[in-house]
Amino acid sequence: MSFKATVLTIFPEMFPGPLGLSLAGRGLSEGRWSLDVRDIRDWASDKHRSVDDTPAGGGAGMVMRADVLASAIDAASPAGDTRPRLLMSARGRPLDQEWVRRIADGGGVLLVAGRFEGVDERLITARNLEEVSVGDVILSGGEIAAMVVIDAVVRLLPGVMGNPKSAVEESFAAGMLEYPQYTRPKVFEGHPIPEVLTSGDHAKIAAWRRAEALKLTRERRPDLLAGRESTKSDD
Figure 1 (cartoon, rainbow, N blue to C red):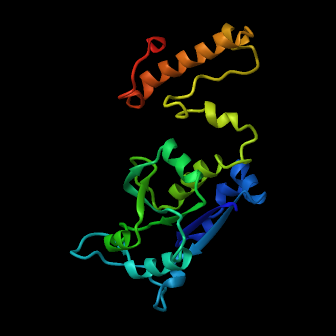
Figure 2 (figure 1 turned 45 degrees about the horizontal axis):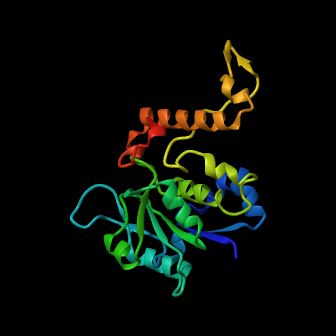
Figure 3 (figure 1 turned 180 degrees about the vertical axis):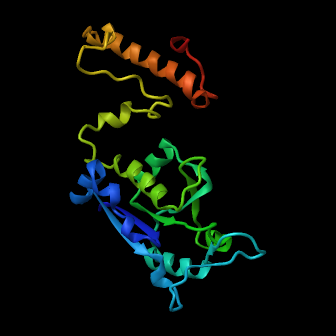
């Protein structure tokens, strides 16, 4: 059974968008994963197909209604559906590669692309939504964030990447950023490829890559090394 991603949104025309191209798009066309996009407005009960209302207690903007979203979620994820239910939210848990791998190991995911000022808190609790953030930024809506999650997940599915080894050696796979990469020409504007990479000595190349990855991580993302036990080879 292929991985199934269901997206609830008020802008279904935004999909598949970039998910229909490159690795994700090829995997989609090959049936390695499927995309089910549903318009939340289809579950609105009034003639205007309203999905939002003014916030209780006053304030700017609008809030997505619990009843409309609940109907949409129940239709897309009925009893027995064990897929995680995610709400794209700036206040959610930060997206990281370890979490992405856990999602990829499952059978799929349901993503709610929120809009306006947010979603009625009662809906989040009642439908057991896990809030996920793609960064400390505010987007116009959850659709682009949902695409980020889906793209990060489906590229890890079996057969999607041409070389499965790529997922092992990339950033975050070993708790560090990826080492620098080089290719032809051998010399670019006076800067040569590091000699060790053309030496043919695989042990030296592996050691160089590890040292460079550690150096970059210390410089740019020291938080990734917090709590990590230092080894002699890391010094």
